[in-house]
Length: 625
Ligand SMILES: Cc1ncc(C[n+]2csc(CCOP(=O)(O)OP(=O)(O)O)c2C)c(N)n1
Image (cartoon, rainbow, N blue to C red; front, side, top):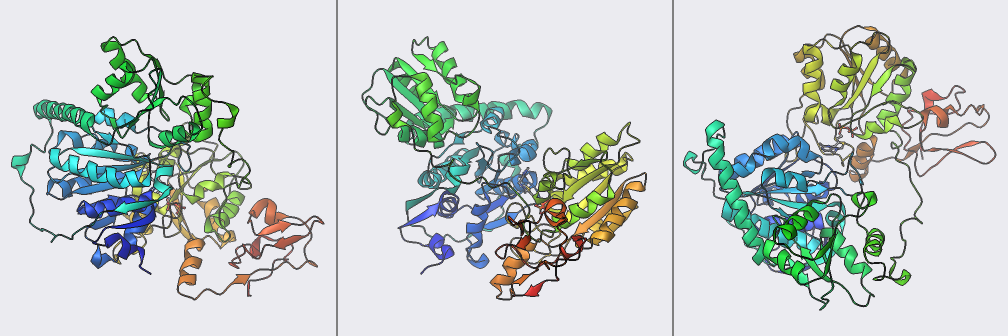
């Protein structure tokens, strides 16, 4: 049996069932991509997991997790103007962080080529919003390729990399959650390793690379001209496809996941509409769209999230004075959520009530699945922290959450986190909340990965402008929420061990005068520290530390060092006060029908953080089972 790493490096053609995210890695290898960067975020982390499956010394490229998406984009750009085909990937909202750099890319002559892989998240499976990143493409004159299947992830990346290299311009490969995670049998082509050319090729003659003032107009002109050439390229490209059913009345224009849903819904329908499936969604293949409109009396645009293509197509029809009746989004609901088959069924029914019958309605396979509320894992240090911190605060105090596993502290029973925005925003929002506020303490939470990602400017601002905020740094040694990627305080980067950048020393270096530090399992101590910290009328910080227990136990299992442990309930001592479920809230505790509390043996990891929470001393110290 070959390992995934061996499969990805295979030189001869082969077929394999893989995820879209894995297919992307093979496409990057075949395209001779040399530098790949990222910051973790769903739905993209499995791209890095596939990269990790290739031993470092065998990787035909360099990969790093950078400290945030902006930095990742800059590293990839630097490599690309030095002649190396590069790629940066991150999640939807990552583009907001990268934007200041990203929007300049199209002005530049990116001699090596650069593909920006976006993991958009229609349906908000794991994001704080449902933003449609195609808006950024229009804003920055950057072409967008949008695959509809893992096979297309593979072929579209290769086409995007070629276009980018040929034209020296950035190209976006826009993936969405289910395209990243779907699996499919893909026929991969062969690949031959090339010697890595280490000659630095950066040359200012390929520039200018300094876009200021008067330099910008010619660069903008060139970006627009390039986009025009891509429009012509799109008209010829096999990535845009027509499914001709000989229907002169009705046509559908669609792309990506919605295309698959359309095909599903129409499977048994008579009189199927023709379909124009766009693979290049920006810029539009104008001639192809015009011909498609002319060939049909009515055309429906089935487009997930915003009505970007609808507007372009309606403008085109207006400019060319076409009489085709064009249906775009029809009500508010059409703007929201993933275009799964059931949704597309409703949308097509609204448009053409006679097209579909109840027989065509997709079977509901989702609503029968039990709902699982999000919660912290058994043994999570954040739970212990919130349990202790809650005791230090008044009900009127304001707590500001940030993004990470600790965000879940906003849920009952802790309810720590009255507001939340995006990565790194907690300290500065807390600063604002502290203004004209002498009575309600402001406590903000920040994870350690987020500290480096976008947390530091808010902290520096709070110090610089003397804001009265207590920062609680939830240090668990990893980027837990997205799958345990290392960060600058982990002592390890993606490729090798590295010096830790300790949070305490950074805070000291910034001049934080009041720093407390404690393991979150020491709940009484943490409560006292937080009380002290909020009583100081200036910026204070508490480092609330405990390793991520999910990562810890997984590593122990891998090293065959894991010894299953468990706590027990002494039913004689238990006074049924239920603090364990009501206030501490570890999912391990189960209340039985007769009122007893029992331990779920499948969940308990025997960390013992609960022992101190029982006023009846009924929870035993953990024992090996
Ligand atoms: C701009 C942006 N990039 C990436 C993400 C995905 N993401 C969600 S939480 C998180 C980091 C969490 O790590 P940390 O701050 O250490 O908190 P932990 O989950 O370990 O508690 C990331 C990268 C995001 N939401 N926004």
